[in-house]
Image 1 (cartoon, rainbow, N blue to C red):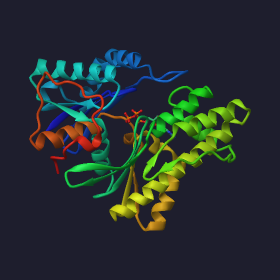
Image 2: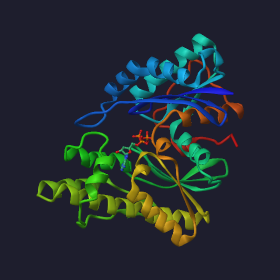
Image 3: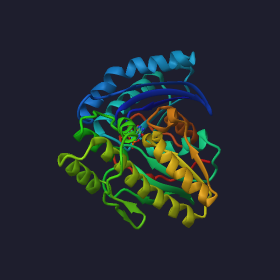
Image 4: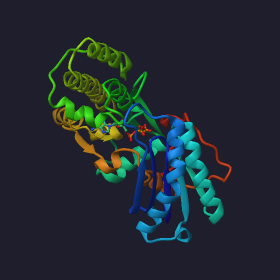
Amino acid sequence: MKCLGIEGTAHTFGAAIMDNKKILSDIRDSYKTKKGGIIPNDAANHHRKVADKVIKQALKQAKLTIKDINLISFSQSPGLAPCLIATRDKAVEIAKKNKIPIIGINHCISHLTSGLLFTKATNPVFIFVSGANTQIISLEGNKFRIFGESLDIGLGNALDKFGREINLGFPAGPKMESLAKKGKYIPLTYTVKGMDLAFSGIITEAITKFKKGEKKQDLCYSLQETLFAMLTEVSERALAHTQKNELVLIGGVAANKRLCNMLKIMCKERKAKFFNVPLKYAGDNAVMIAYQGILEYKSGKEDNYNIDIIPNLRTDEVMVTWK
Ligand code: ATP
């Protein structure tokens, strides 16, 4: 079964073709800014502008034509509404024109299942840290249950928000990681509430300290140390509670080496295995959308061409019907 997956929940427009578990192509084009964060309508315009080119390249890289495609899957939820609409419109247009079945995918769920595709983990606790999401998740029964999460903004967005204040542009996470290498520790508030986390107060505190003259690199270092330690603490508790011995780190912030190291040390101390999705697939991509499309289609799901977007669909609202 060959599925064309189309991703476009936020900054990245991607198209990928999977033949069951085999990646035939993976093309991406990301919206970036030199200053400031994502403007949803601008990102949607970016997606509209690059969509045909990206999809054409994905077919070319897979050495296929649209006639060879058995299924189209696209990121239907959750995400920035204008971006979701632009992506849905393109997916429906191609599916309708070529009479190909279509299926809408929850982007966050596809991050989780691709964590199983790309690692040797079988029944892990997932640490999902992207721009918009920070969740500690485990599959229990027929739903991915959320054991802990950010009560305000996602970890990536928190880093980006501070990065914006110090003029790093978007995305700020990687630039903050390199600045942090030269930094020293300044105490910041540590906000863990049960299994949940809160980042925005700490970001405001760091911005205030920056305005009072603290150095950029010291604040980048201290933010990483504080926010990642908070995440490591709740991750350890989730492993203890679920009695699982595998941890899978996914989402764009998984690119951060310091975060990986903290989690690795914690896992080693608990004799749990740490898995990191290859960096190329840790952030937004269409491979995971294509793979999830195949899983769900094979389990009997199919949508129609009047499909709507669902900007706020949570991971724990999706029934897991596939193996
Ligand atoms: P979602 O998947 O929830 O819709 P998203 O589309 O914003 O969110 P991703 O592409 O998974 O997310 O991740 C992007 C985020 O990852 C950005 O906030 C970016 O700053 C952060 N990020 C990328 N590389 C690093 C790094 N090396 N260190 C810290 N953060 C990073």
